[in-house]
Image (cartoon, rainbow, N blue to C red; front, top):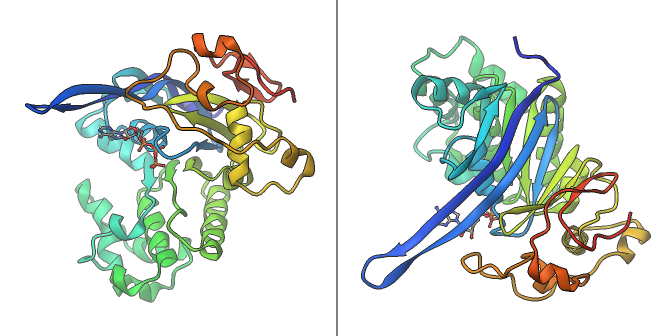
Length: 321
Ligand SMILES: Nc1ncnc2c1ncn2[C@@H]1O[C@H](COP(=O)(O)OP(=O)(O)OP(=O)(O)O)[C@@H](O)[C@H]1O
């Protein structure tokens, strides 16, 4: 029996490199999309992964879901090594570990009714659909049972995302990776979906990994935050509401709402080009854009070791809390 206090998900040194190009015209190039990431998630946690486009959030989510293989590192789910899970062990993992995608329209087959979409996870593992389960799933996500006969094009974005969430709940998972689940929705609908996710978190005892580029939303929704920049974790915040210590996290706030005047005073808008992931500068990858960079930052890569009182930061000149 797993101990409830043990981490549900442990990630050690997870690294993913992509090689592109090749052939007559292009030399092959390798980039590191996710670099030596460690993470422990305990039951009931809502861990936010935040960063600008291209920082490796979705790649990290796909690695954590065992949808792609890491170049290095290890993934333990409920204490079991699932890094290279295949066949039956992958199917069993899928029941417990599910994902909700950003765009509910492209993640639902337009030829399937809602009932078909919700039956599909059972068919995929060769199981019969338990009697009343489809109605129960629709109830869980706040959709009228008559929606079972609708096609995706007959529903709004928010309703489609509710179907996406219901699908993820089909096998009663205990862990859900939410990859920007509200990014394609209007603000008012976003709030309804977040409220639904909060409600399910409480009622179904779920654990979430929540991927977003919106630090404001992540600070509101999550219990811990991991901030990524060009594949590396630059800050881990155990209290999402506390002031950030990494200049990048502080700058990310410029793109989100900060009602606290003290927090507003620390905001430095991000300027400068993001370095090419194929050709990272020596030292800290954020140094070329960092308002607090010191000479050491150009030469040495800071490690995520400096304790901040609210987690850890990878920075030679962090903002004092
Ligand atoms: N299959 C792939 N082949 C080559 N490069 C890839 C592949 N998937 C992702 N990348 C690259 O890896 C880096 C990280 O991409 P990723 O999609 O994980 O970032 P992200 O933070 O989720 O961005 P977004 O918010 O735009 O989805 C990017 O530079 C991307 O171009």
